[in-house]
Image (cartoon, rainbow, N blue to C red; front, side, top):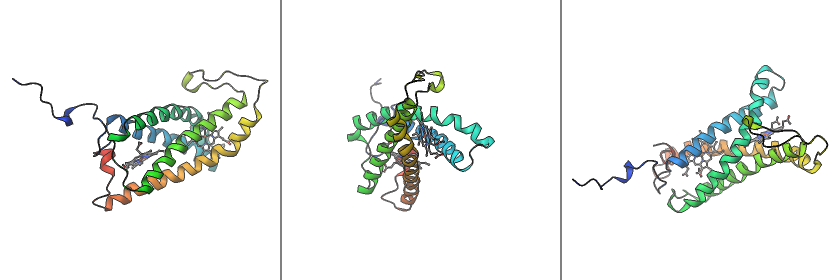
Length: 186
Ligand code: HEM
Ligand code: HEM
């Protein structure tokens, strides 16, 4: 009996292909979307309802989940670059630029947040991992100032682009040729 013939669709994890994102790309996309939901919910509640019970509950998740996103985006970008040739092509230039902007901000926003955290000289141990030791007498002013100036602002810009991204993914459903949602779901 010939046991060597396997259908490509039967392989797991499913690889990236021009028709759809594979298992690893989808895990990065939806797993990180979930983490972004936590980080942005915390930021929104912190901005609009600081010092409420909801803020006290959600805000402690902001920094650790943001630090986790920093690690994940580095792995995701490496994966995307390594598999760029076999992934679905961009539907147009705007979609390409939109995805590049998402990557740029997904890297810059948590990086600047972490830089400010380091500059503050305070200990930082997300999920119990001792990432930064306390340095009580060693505050680095330019790092904290850069963070205060840019972290929140760029974070809101990222939120706006994410909203546009979700809107466009749903908008494209109306088009037979540009319906991209199944690339990430089906
Ligand atoms: C992708 C990940 C992240 C996103 C999208 C994000 C987004 C935001 C946004 C939109 C704000 C503004 C909230 C406000 O003005 O009240 C904010 C504030 C802040 N974030 Fe992040 N953040 C991320 C990661 C981090 C990380 C890794 C850290 C530190 C380790 C951090 C620390 C802070 C701090 C300290 C504030 C200021 C809160 C205040 O001014 O009271 N964030 N972030
Ligand atoms: C309900 C939420 C979301 C939906 C429905 C959605 C939908 C999609 C779809 C359909 C694609 C494929 C687009 C194409 O091939 O042209 C895609 C790709 C992408 N999405 Fe989302 N998305 C969501 C949330 C997010 C979030 C929160 C982020 C980042 C902050 C994000 C970042 C990206 C990026 C960078 C790509 C390019 C493919 C990659 O490298 O992973 N998405 N998204």
